[in-house]
Each structure stands twice: as C-alpha cells, then as structure tokens.
Image (cartoon, rainbow, N blue to C red):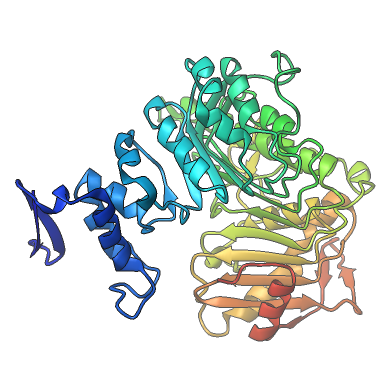
Length: 484
C-alpha cells in the first residue's frame, strides 16, 4: 500500500492508497517515532499547535496508522471499536499517557483487553466513558482484567453514553461505582432497566454509586415510557445523599403540541395522545429531579441549567403547586445561577410572546404544557427563588436598535407574575441577563431599594437599571458562568 497526497474533485487533500507499501512495513517503534515527530514541541515540529485535525485523514487511512497515531499522542480521547491485538508489538514505544478520556464498549468483549492495558498504562486517566451493555456477559466482565482496572480508576469524571443496564448486569454497575474520586457525572441517553424499589439491589450496589459527585448532567433517553423507572432509579443511584453544586438537564425530544383541534384529521386524537404521553414523561422527569435536588442539594446547589433551546411549547412543573405550601418551602440557600435557553429572542418581545395566562387550545387535565415563554422563565425562577441571577441564552441575540428597552419593560411587567402567583413571594431576584458567547451579554439589575409594587390588576412590577456589558461579564464570572 502506497500513500500519496492528491486533490479530489472538491479540491480537498486526501491520502490515496495502493498495494505494496513499504512504509507500513517499517518496525512499529519507528512508525511511532515518525508520528510523534509530527506533534512534538520542538523548533522542527510540523504542527506547532494542539490542533491535530489535519491528521485525522492520515490516521483514518489505515488501521495500523490509526493505532500508531493515538499511541504517539495525536488524540487525547479514544473509543476503541475493534480489538487492538498488536499493541504488545509496540513495546515501550507505546506511550499512551497522553490519553485523558477512555470510552469502553461493554458490549464489545474484543476491546476489553486493550482498554484494560490503557487504564494500566495511564494511571492518571481523568475520564471513563461507558457505552453498550453486558447483560449476557456479566460473569465474563466481573472476571476480566478490565473489571480490576475499573476498581482502581482514580479519575474525576464518569460518563454513561447510551449505556444500558438490566437486573442481570447490576454486578457490572456495582463494579463501576464506588469511586470516591468522581466529582462529575454525565448520564447521556442511558437506561436503567430495573427498579431500585422492587428489584434485588440491596447487597449488590452501594448507594450512592459516586458519593463525592458534585456536578451532574442528565440527558433523557428518547421515548422513555411513563412505566419505565429510569429517572427513579437514576435518582436513587446517583443523587441520593449527594450534595450537588451544579445540575444540568436536557431531553432528546423537546416538549411539543399539535396545535388547535382538527376534527377533519382522523389521526388527530392519536397525535394528541402521543403528545400527552411524551410531555407527561418529560414533566415526570423534571418533577422527580427537582424533588431530588430539594431533598439532597437544598443547602449546596449553586447552578441549575436547562440546556435545550425552548420554543413554542413549555413544560410547567409548578402547575399543581399550592401557594400556601410553596411559599413555606425552605429555599435553595446557595443558588447563584439559573440558566435557561430560548431558541429565538424575538419570542420575548411584547408583540411576539403568548400570554402567560392563556391556556393551550388542547388544555385538559392531562395537559402539562403551555405556550408562554415568560411563564416558563417565571415558573422556573419560582422553583429557585433564592437565586439572584437569571440567565437566558439565545441562539441569536441581535435585536433591532431600540428594541432592548421593549424587552426590559416586558421583563419588568411580566417576569415575576407567575412566580408571585405560585409562591407568594418575590425572592432574591436581582439580575436578568440575556445573550450568548458569540453576540455577548446584556441585562438589567432590579432596583433593590425601590423593591416591587402591585398594580390594580394584581400584576407585579419592578424598577430596573440597564447594565454595562462589562458589568454583565463580571456578574456572570463571579457566579461561575463559562463565558468561553
């Protein structure tokens, strides 16, 4: 096989291959040296920066070169897809200490030995990512060298990405858990096909699985049935007795609505049933997560974020709250940031947003959604009313000149209404900031001396002053908001 650099029809450089390549016949140690020379930090370095994206085609052109590339330090995150049986041929030249994140496919037994070798060679591995399932391989996994390496993992970050665990694989989950060093957990579209309340978990798994975790990001798996105990099991295993500081949540499928009733559509009722089930599933998840945060993180939570770009339909978890009960709940004592995302900033303008009191045309006792972006923002603030800074991220922050005043006046006249109706208090709200990392951030500060007032119709208003751009940055940085 021969490697030549050529231009394809799109004008991009590609590596073409032909048979009889003497390059691949070189000793593995020499191949590693050649690849390492590309990224070594010397005056002769071919790629002086840390951007190795131009070498992706090089590493992808042949499996042996791909193995050489990551062993030479071109990539810091790897996910072996096939068994690397020849890794022992590289001897001491196989330097994989640059790897900081390793993804392990539990369903692919062929990669276990190499993954175990990586974990042994890289004791400072920071992140372990679990994918796949081992339901029919539990015994083999528990007896493998990989299981031993999992028990010795000392990294701070754990990721479950499209992983699946059943009752038969509880021993595998128990082997992964128990790490006191893990402070960050990302549960990404993974499933727990067992119920911690009814299945024989006691004696197999120690709860919580990661007792030192402080930050959690939870992405709901798509099409989760209301009967599936996914979120309940997640709360029991990962949130129980864990005082979190940061929590982020997202859904693969956003809240939705079919629009006004269409009696001419024979499938309309079926569509409504599907929407109600999907929205109820999201409502149930949000409520369970919020209850868990109240139970275990009320004295520690600092940041809550919903990372989905919301538009048109919004889930309201406060719809059944009783004001006299809600107002007496102890607040989240250390809350600093409430971060919500809206797809289009235009929806916040007075002539664009739906009324916060107008029900959905499909509204029934089973409806959990509404169509008011301001009711959504206000309702979330009511749940974390001890938070003094609300950040609304948008895809595009560009407004017509002079429109910002309309936006701030709308916030003044609308934002606190739903919150006050729900909890009968204003809370510690002080800063309202809108923007994104590309267009920047702008915002207003509530005048804490003037306070707020109620008009004749019972609506809450508050005085404000606009913030300078640099002041917005300072407020966000002081509360740990990532501006980059």
